[in-house]
Amino acid sequence: MIINYNRILVFLLTTLITYPCDRAHARSW
Image (tube, rainbow, N blue to C red; front, side):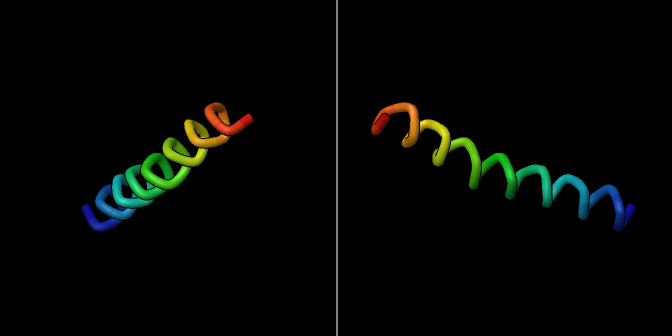
């Protein structure tokens, strides 16, 4: 259960960090 939770947290964190950056890059460039 702990591993599953960790996996979900990492997934959410990565998506939250990468998604806005990707959008900003697409808009700025």
